[in-house]
Length: 205
Image 1 (tube, one colour):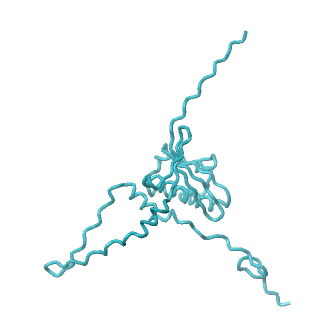
Image 2 (image 1 turned 90 degrees about the vertical axis):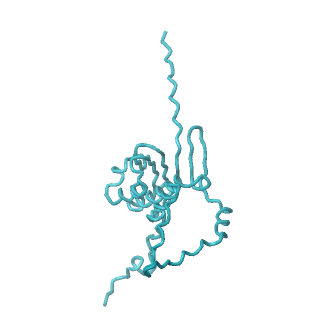
Image 3 (image 1 turned 135 degrees about the vertical axis):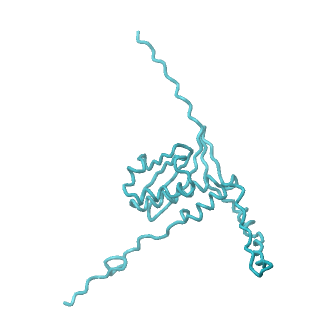
């Protein structure tokens, strides 16, 4: 009699937390997932160096990680479609910046979904809270310059750094410009012309 083969139980998956976001550039769309890891960047199941051949595209993808000093600390998984090489690189850059902003945002700006041992976190904007902040009184004006005994202006004290380092990370990402959607698109062709602006060649006869 044939011996029955014992089925080996699959090892339980470790609980993981993913931060998800979507980036767009031209006609390309990139869905990005970020989790703690060893620094691997995978795009459409291919490594970064294999997917993007040009250095400028690889630099665009790694830009948000370098700004926040997270190179080698996070694993990035991307699904990109549409557009060309440059468009997809820009879309991945924006999606990664948005995912990092979600990671460093406070809990009230996050929305969690739990599936078994996997947690997915995406950005969440509370409209009621946003309206309350908009109605809040403006900050006080800066203090007037103070003159010293010799008539020289005493410079004001430097503003204190934010107590929460995550707030500083979000400010770094915002100031870098990676969160801004690049609205430049290919201009449509016009009837009577050969392209968007290019007209027909002049013929004397």
